[in-house]
Image 1 (cartoon, rainbow, N blue to C red):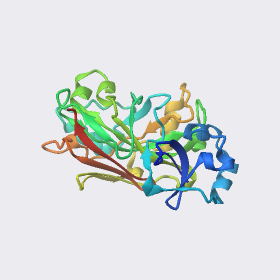
Image 2 (cartoon, rainbow, N blue to C red):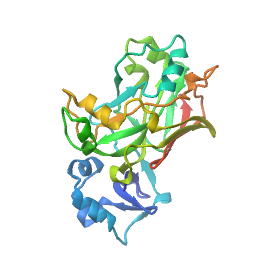
Image 3 (cartoon, one colour):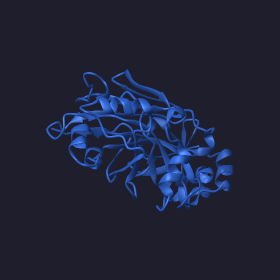
Image 4 (cartoon, rainbow, N blue to C red):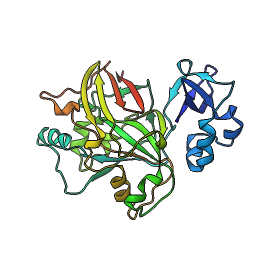
Length: 293
């Protein structure tokens, strides 16, 4: 089951369900009318909803190709939680870039300001005067489904609603010139999210999903989520110790090797570049880089 936000031909912004390239808006389904958006759905989702969706039939729908797909959320209630250096090969390339990043024995967690989110097809506005080292990071993103704290690792999947794709767009100079990564990760639109959220029952666990990035058709990243150092359950366990996770929270699980700074010389993004982030079982998140005028 895929859930999305979209804009129809009248300019109405709606939430809905995709089934066989047809979009069924919540407002057109009596059973789902009570849900005003995807976050509202997540907070109240239950087994009856799954049964209804498995037998969904309606004469009113939108064709997928006739709408503009928006990010699943207009903004996040809390900043995205990100995991740095969660693939061994990405650690190696990060350490090789300009002296590299210090690798701590524990996981690297940081927040990414997500008040202004980019969605599928949106331009990423690049201020080259501020930073000429714009980079991409394709990541599998966890969407938390219910409130939880001090979650046991064996119970972690009970707190997952589903998964989406997050491009952790990064300005490397800003990232490295401050004591923390926050500024270099948090410029407007640097959280690209989508194209939709896929509910967790569509997946088999443990996850072994191909994950890749193309820039102008060139494959830059090509890996699998089974190579994550810390898997889904471990991340939720660690993050929830002493800290409450809420429905709709996003956890970006880290990126594999192949980011722009990992090449010699580096292959940073430039004006007009098309970035395609793909995760198996979810889809492709596309954005073009547009230099600030």
